[in-house]
Amino acid sequence: MAGLKKLIAGNWKMNMLHTDGAALARDIVDGADKVGCDLLLCPPSTLVSWIAETASGSPVLVGAQDCHEAESGAFTGDISAAMVRDAGASYVILGHSERRHGLGETDSRVRTKVTAAHSAGLVAIVCIGETEAQRDAGETLDVLSAQLDGSLPTDGDGDAINGANTVIAYEPVWAIGTGRTPTLEEVAQAHAHIRAHLEHLLGEAASDIRILYGGSMKPENAGDLLMIANVDGGLIGGASLSADSFLAIAGAATA
Ligand code: PEP
Image (cartoon, rainbow, N blue to C red; front, side, top):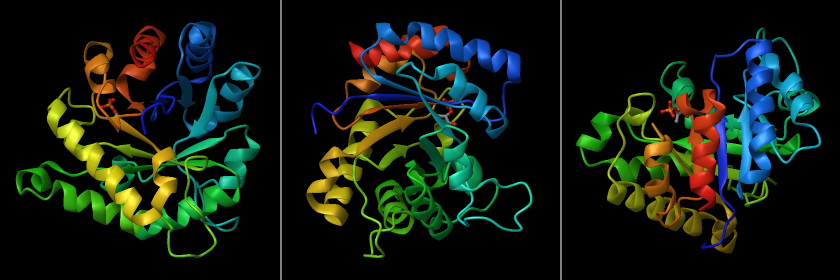
């Protein structure tokens, strides 16, 4: 587990037009050689091919924020995993809480999307995390187990989960965009639990799977969060919209 190269991923959400997004990506590309972790930018789908072109030839990776589970068809407004790949991305975020809780996305839907992402050659970043009510009720670890069970296609349907095709992002719902974070002990407990549950599901393959922390990570708290065992990087929302703060977090991941 120790020694997994850290991944710092920016989730731009529904922000950035062409000019601002390209400038942000260029600044991050320019700073990328000063950090020792992997960097990933997940712009809105309108910008994926443009950001992929901007990052081309650099170590900066590009991903999308969602994809549909079907290969093609009458799904107005959606994009398929193959389209994400075709646009130049190599990663896709799946099951973000803003889709689970805002759009009613279920574990089983996320699971079909993970399979679609893998079939298209994309790395799936599978987001899980408890609500505040679930934490208050002492249900956090059970919720995380259930989300892993439900969202990862591990039932022998041909989709082998491993560190090359899957990343887990632990994002407490109540910490996203709020400026609040769990204590370092709570993060350590959640990540250790996720690692143990992955081992239960996948055996040895679990040790190569990166587990990101997400939820109000910023330069001020990144160093402490990224030092915790089994925290293999961060999924960053608000602080990924500035090259300075995103690269400062990446610098903390490198230290
Ligand atoms: C996110 O949306 O994945 C996220 C972690 O957002 P923020 O960093 O703004 O809390």
